[in-house]
Image (tube, rainbow, N blue to C red):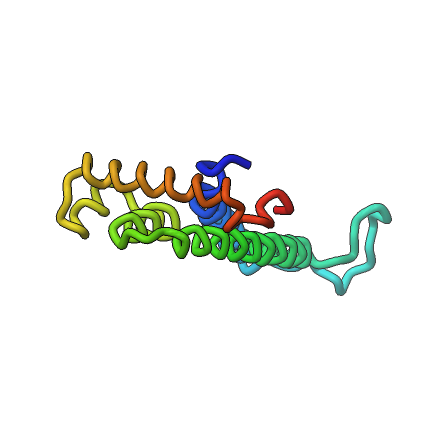
Length: 149
């Protein structure tokens, strides 16, 4: 994986988690709103499932929760890798930019307002940080496990 892909991965994972949580919320609504069948009368059609209809939604909720847990584990791995890269930086401004942009997933506008800098300065600090991280990667100081992800 190239450096930019690794740094952008937390943002992508957070978007996926948000999407999965939205789906889970819809499944919960469906599980709570579907009435159960009438099980007092004898079954006429033998091919139908005898399970209550909401059970299917509960099973889907459980499957989605497993996916969400896996995504959180993946997010933790990438955040550790990025923090390792941040620790390799010596400049405090570069550290702040990398954390704000890639871990907190803030926009350039938000970063500029928070640090009272121009967009040009913020992007310059990011470029310098990426260059320094790449140099430390080539020196094999960090990211030994990136290929294993």
